Image 1 (cartoon, one colour):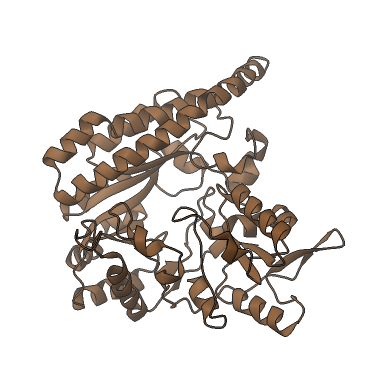
Image 2 (tube, rainbow, N blue to C red):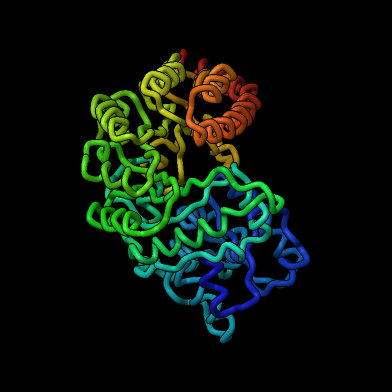
Length: 448
């Protein structure tokens, strides 16, 4: 989307993602400005790319994205400028200032000057977020988009009204909800479906036609969500949809009915924990009984449920991984994302627990255990994560899915089986290191 906005004033604009294709360095090193967006887990790679570009070209290198915005003193050491917050408007301001030879002094910028950090002030979040991205600007994505492992994605709103301590969304995007117009969302969905539903090798139709509305909480503005669902119902769009929500939407029979009419096949619930004490620890207004009731009511309306879970709360002990796996299987949850407690700089959870972090090797902040839990060692907690994934994505459950599930979930579970097992292998590689730090942790615990 940001590349789409930038191309409005610089025709020669192109975007790269290393999860899509290798970088064409002859193109990048010829650029005047290179913007690099980073999350915490890929921050170090972003820094490597920035330093390579600075060493081999005359381009201005600008870092942005969630990690750069929330940890700008670190990010500023690796680039010429950091753009804070969302880039919809600041990218244009930056390009225009460079083009005019003007000072980079508009709000929302951090840079080094004579060894000191200069912060130009906070920037107001953009109100107009109706731009639809041009997927052709992402280098070679048109080839990857044909694959069934890729989910077509549309983002319709930003922000969250809640206050969970581990969530970086509120710190980065704000507690207020900003929405796109229903008409813009429908247009974006049409364009996204048209781009992704291509034939592989020109012959084989793409089977995974699901569209993922990637909002952090699609129903935060209930009235707006209803208007989008109604616009979908009134359109001629015929596709399966998925989106993320807090559990409370499972009690809203009107919304659930509209979701079914609009073509939604599932909801992704940020369940996180299965203990009321854990919800309380991280300021998540929720209870176990309510979560179960919401899941059951959602399923009664013909919608499947996926679940997001976190390991590593202060009351987690050995067996928590199996507990989550048993919960997922018992309640017929279709798929999961399970990660150890994550700590994004500047979030309340990070500030409260930074003395308990094992390291700040950001590339390992991708689900691995990175802190010292209260009632279980880091090594044992990583084992619980591996147990949970191994139980849910076992070969036996894959065979069962291939026999009994609907065709869409045969396809999805198969893809997730291989992806989750690759993640499990990644977590296993970290075990020797976590065993070594856990031995020291045990000694400290025994010593009080």
